[in-house]
Image (cartoon, rainbow, N blue to C red; front, side, top):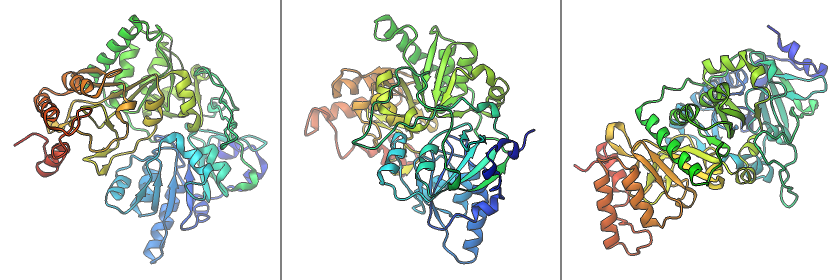
Length: 507
């Protein structure tokens, strides 16, 4: 096994190797800290834990010590969880999935800014989010001239380096050195009015270089680590997930048959999760060949498609692989070197590129209402789950925007199709298709009442379909307007009943 010294070819940075505790001691209370990481990949493993210990000691001594924490997306327990447990985070953005972080946000003890992932880097450049004091980044190595080799995610690292006053590097020797060259770091973005077109016309095109650029004088510490990413294993597809996947594949076959899609489809984007993996597994066993992906994360289902040859190329910003899939990827990385590229998330999620490539976007919903508005972030309107992530980037700009959800939850106590969404992340204007295990509703070109009838008939669970039909008919008879008829006294009553009784079913 090589050491961090072997991975750090720049003499000056070798002189800055310190312990994680020493590096954490350089971070001051009240600072905004940009950390690497995207869906449990490529995040710093040692410095956040050391910082949590320092914050805990400060709090025990009666001192106030909290930071603003900015990342690419979600991270892992060693970062989000550790800092949240010691009450060390004042403001969190742009996405999270840690249960301790979630609990503190929903109890009002942590501020949270939920942002489209394509907006984060530009908001920092615009000065909308305040000043970035320090960046803490995991890298695989450093070249002799000081360029940084990314690890299993890129995320916002480019912007963190450019905007932060200081940089702390974690050189993780667990990460495969063969990752070098798999990244495409584009440095052509600018702020208005100086922006230029991003010249990408296919998912496999490279438009940048392989390394992050960082002034060695900006680096205040280098920490040696040897620790794996903490991505979780995915559950095997269940009956509902397989049914959703089958509906989507039938729909795509129809779109090819009528000439709206080519035989090898258009580039795929897929959110993270068990349903998404089931859809990818279905595509892997299906009739389509030579597929491509332009997405945020390369997860197990896409890796299987690359292995089988169904997918010829995948572009992402992170490898969101289960431990078993990560082991396979590392053991066979030579097979994937020319077929996988990792980019900054400001490029992987860029609306210009998404629109130009014409993606098929497939993302999860918490609930959808009868008119096609989708909630992907909140329970009963107030309680955040994870965040909008990149789903909005893709949904609004994709060629096809598909949202997937089981029709019911909690053994039928919750209907995922409701009269009115309790929170709206994706308006009816950005939603083309809704799919549950019950069926698929193609909403393109339909007026609101037509959309409502199709969603109820195709997607609602039989236990709730009569209730939804009854609501729609009474709204059509009694609403003040008939374009999108609602009974405002009842529109959110299902959610209130859930809070009061534990079920959306009437007594």
